[in-house]
Image (cartoon, rainbow, N blue to C red; front, top):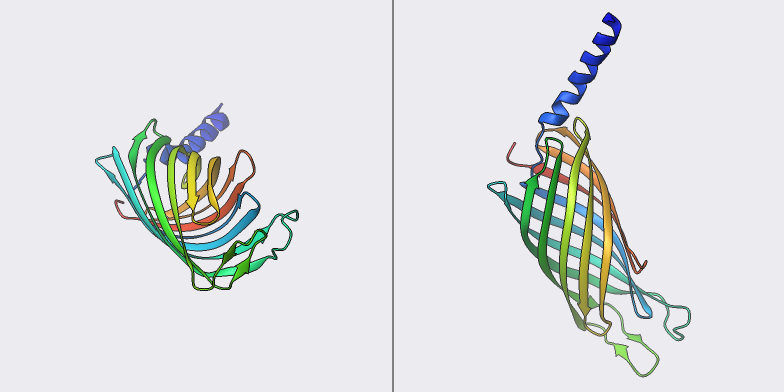
Length: 224
């Protein structure tokens, strides 16, 4: 009986910090992402780096801002004759903003949701010809608008170890390549070795297989 009691006490000590730890949405973040998007007969592969800022006002109103830079490769469907894979952009710059809300739903779980918009500009690095007489000229700028909505949750599974998930709907409208809508899921794992630092990774994929991404980031939590 004594041995069983000691084991239960040890488990309680381990579990205690998890139950006592609330989630913070007040942080600055730096990260990198690889993303592939299929738009009609064209595949865009993007490597990006971003810095962002999130704020949770009074534990209810959630807002955020993100700046990013990226390089993009253009590939094509094998049936789309006459176009070869090429590095066709030397720089993509973008900005995103969102507003939403968050709620600590239990001592170990939190939920969040929001709506956002993003814009970016892509500079074509080399001229690319397409069947049907279409072409991209070197130095041409392509603008992209993105509208998105998300609903997600975060859960402590161990002291300082978080799993998270998100459902997202995104509509992308891009010059020359047209527009598409993606409904995707995103899953991630984060480790928080100290109160003010969090390191994590994520995987995102849309349900039709037209968009896929992997990412990693570091967060500085500033309300701890």
